[in-house]
Length: 281
Image (cartoon, rainbow, N blue to C red):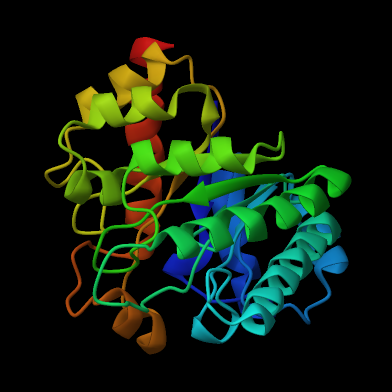
């Protein structure tokens, strides 16, 4: 198992100010970090070298918007989305990120007033197949994330996401499991994990209030037991949000501090994951 920390707790992009945090994350015992990929114009090769020097592995996370929505009815917008996802993959290769995760299958925060149409589903599959071909050529794994119904409408459950991945039908395209979204949408977290099975290539460890894992209502024993049942052995990345960035706090609807500080959350989260894994694997 590899343990990672999502940098969105501190920043929306890599910058000089994050270097002391990266050093701390390594010192505390993490194997790597999850890098926000929203600005594709950074020198990711240089950052990859810095992370190598620190001994930190990395994954990356990105999103799509209404302007580059891969399921849009407008073919030009779909192509912009495909190209944006391919560019994110190029950044991953430069950075040395093994996985590109996130809800880049469709526009975040955009809704039609109903569930996905058959055309939207098919557009999503066709768009992702082109992205997967590029990912395969770069040896980067796509780990598609399903979100709760308040953030997206194309993919909300593990069953639907597994079906989507199977229809894309490319070895570079798999799915991720996020405990926060599953806590909202799934009837049974263990059944959701079983539905993903060997398609699950990435896991977000995230509490129901987005703060310190283990300090909320997620059924953690159920989740870890099921991950062991499917023999999951990849990245477990903590995804927590706070008040460090006003723009991200607004986007994630975080209005109050729910932990002592970012350092304490990060240290406690690692011990939490390590203890659960040590009991089962």
